[in-house]
Image (cartoon, rainbow, N blue to C red; front, side):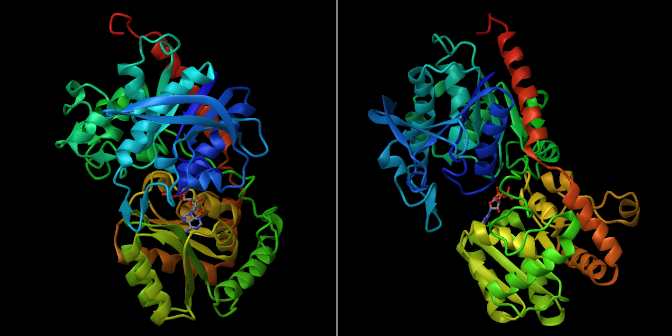
Length: 498
Ligand code: ADP
């Protein structure tokens, strides 16, 4: 099969979150299975600074944006260590900026224009590259117009008739909502600006375009696929998602164990696996305590958090719990994150309040993220919602027992250490349902009690998690099944409707 993945992020070219991890690995896994996969993304400043050679091509295009014409060209690269092509859309006014989407807590004002341009550039690139494409796989609001362009503008264009579209939602909270006049930038007819298609409460909603026009929609875990059809998680699009339930699938993301494996992780002071985890983690814990300036105390449980500092991640639950624990409990905390300024202040204040128990690093630091997974006894993810979540899966492999809220991908990957689950050898973490500081506090206490007083049970939980395989193999196979089904459905569509 020929698949083109269109995305605004793919590691190691551009990354702000899990989207980059998915789009950086899935194409390589598809290629490994004998398929022709390629990726296309914007040539951001971050991409140019990634240290990977980008070759210019002579493929140029002029894109109509509102009443102007904007030019761009394609650059070409490959994923390091693979032959999988990566195409980059160069347009420096739009993409040569310090950040990808926002600076200083404010979105770039022309985000709609930037990603209308990118989506149209992808459509043109298909023609210019003369690459046969059977499935175009778009991701999130930044590329959500692609299924709409395919269906509304290119369906009768030679070479595009048989291209099927899959659209993946990585997070419902980011929808690409703009004022109605931005409809002019899309170049689509105003007749599509209605409540069933591109309009949402008077504005333009790009994510909705993807949901409405894609042949198939996926999201990143089976539980999240169900949740987003409800008012609590659908962020206003639950109705339109429910109306497409027959074409909506949940596919859990996988872990790139080439990057995330404590047995061969070069960032760790000591490598370890299932057979020597206790020794390895003790050494990593002590090194981590030193690195972040905490007292080197092997007996105190060390709890870690790594993530974007956003509403989603449950920081409002963590704050009161960490504050209370810092005063009363013999436990240590290490936080690594960046994001909303108000949450940066909240967690910085926690470390100032009790520096010998709480260490905080603000910023994005991949190496430290690995060492936190390796050095912590417990990894905390009290997310309000979590489409898939990768950190809990990394934690499992690194022997940091996850304490999570049962939502989305966390519900699909973490089995609570209830006695019967421990007995059955299934438990790999601790979880709670109620979104409250008390429920988090209780669950953390349960975890710490087990850590301190039931070493055999703790070992079993750690080892169960370390042995589990959450690799891309399973996810890539599922995507291939979905591509094949989508293509068959697309080709069998009623020609009268075409
Ligand atoms: P999300 O996609 O919602 O941000 P995920 O858990 O799916 O959350 O993926 C987050 C990814 O970004 C993980 O690879 C995680 O390690 C990484 N990450 C997030 N924040 C940081 C940070 N401050 N420093 C290093 N890595 C981070």
